[in-house]
Length: 279
Image (cartoon, rainbow, N blue to C red):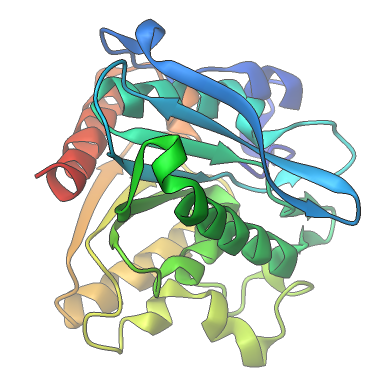
């Protein structure tokens, strides 16, 4: 979840959205192993924390790293502690994989995204921490997926050169920031390519298999344009994408739209992740 102050969330307060779980469940979600508040880095004396979700039994699990969207400034919301990421963590672990949810510094202000560079540093730090602790945490860091949501989409390029990256997932997330008013303050146009997964498509094999979930009734300005530009470019380059569209879905449909299409998309997402991490 991200962009929580936008008009699409008018029917709920940011706090209500923060608490809302994913509208899908699997057997065994309550039985997974959860370790909370692991410190993955310290910056200026502040602890940055992550939560780890593991299947009930087994060893050396492949890992899905969740990159939350841009929560609004001025609200004491911890991304990893939101209902959305708690339930996604349990869904992943109940599906036989590990999940890491972590707090990073990207926020959405009245002038758009802020602290994007710091959030990129946080993502690199949590992946480096995962690699350094993989044996202790019972993880296989050479089987890695990164799952970005909403305003977290521009952080996906940060992960592209990570060893062991098997696939990416983008849920209603920006895949191109060129000309986007949300990122004009955070991203000078001459550096927009750094944060645009679309631009990486020009390099052969630069982008691993990618699952894209698009919300047909997404009201976040320019969100669908960003996704559609990426998809058009991906098709011309024969990039390995899987696109699913929830034609009546809102932004954050996985917590807002409790319907058959949402559940189908979540099932397809889990199947995609299993095929690339467990297959």
